[in-house]
Image (cartoon, rainbow, N blue to C red; front, side, top):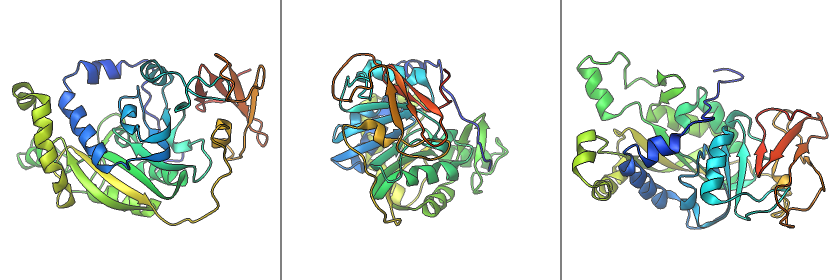
Length: 326
């Protein structure tokens, strides 16, 4: 484990278009939608979507009053804006429901115990220090909050067969992660459960997903039918996990504390300085307008009164990746 793990950056990538829209992943997308529907609360207040990308799953969180989309890539968040609409922010309230934040999961820029739910779908597999990332998520969740985590399963049936036939070197039964490509990791289910427990989560339900992720099956059978069959097998995740993808629903436990003093219409009160941890941050813009005025394309920054760092806000995206240049 490292103090500053490397970050997987999708800046400039056409991932949504090439992988999902035209990449033959309709089956996987439908399977994930089924799993999310089974695991998500029907309603809630403030949800954090970690690794939101271009907003593929955001529409599935319709029961929540507000969704914060977090990704390291500005271009991915811009694609999400084009799909979902611009964001509510302290410099122009284009939408009251979606907020866009560019930040590093290892250095989340939110005050503690802010969110009552979070999701991390197809994101943990890019984490070189998964336990550290999970601890960060726990810090920003309220006690009792729901956390939906998806991870790539090292102990999947294909890997077991390949190992048995000596067609791969790494052992699918050992607990350490395997990096099969740069910043792409598979994890053992028992290791993930252990990290979640240490971070302060209790696993409530496990679903196995993408049981039929085979090219010839996806070509031969319509995606809706194949996903329907997958739905029948997803609950077997409570007994064993042999699929390439595993979903778990967790509950944030312990740490009963004082809820943060934030206002729904004061979005800047959600944030802390990711460098020194100070909150609140000061909103600085051309007109220092309140968030409910609806003025267009206001830009500015959030300033930390403690360490004096400045974090840019531009075109509806809060950018906490690097300090703002003057």
